[in-house]
Image 1 (tube, rainbow, N blue to C red):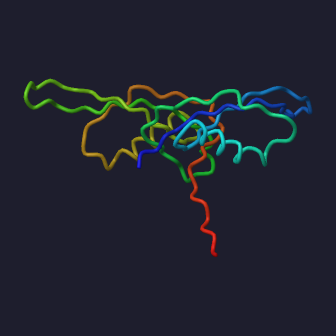
Image 2 (tube, rainbow, N blue to C red):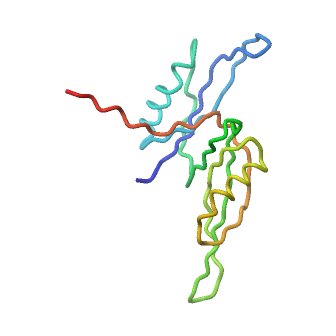
Image 3 (cartoon, helix red, strand yellow):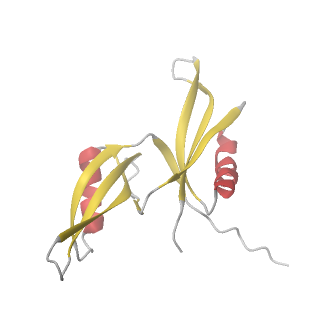
Length: 151
């Protein structure tokens, strides 16, 4: 089953390190089937961490083909990479490029490229990394199946 990703933004009063309270907007990525489910799941995930009032300010579909997660706890940022897969049209002999957006977790830009290259090792086709940019995403919430209740 294909995963649909939704970028959800929340606005709330955050207590800064110096003790000041500041209104901030943070972005998160949620795995869901619809906008309604994305909002519901997003609220379930963030409510335990929110004190006071907060508002979901935006939910939009994120065009992400793959997610490359890291097991390293230092990798706390998300990088949006555009990758062009190169194929050759056998009839015309023309090179064709198909681009996909892949989200990569890493601590910094060079490591994001390294993590992407490591993840791409198993692919048979040629590819070119077109762009890499850090995203404002705070966290990614994957779908978790609800625990089965016994009767």
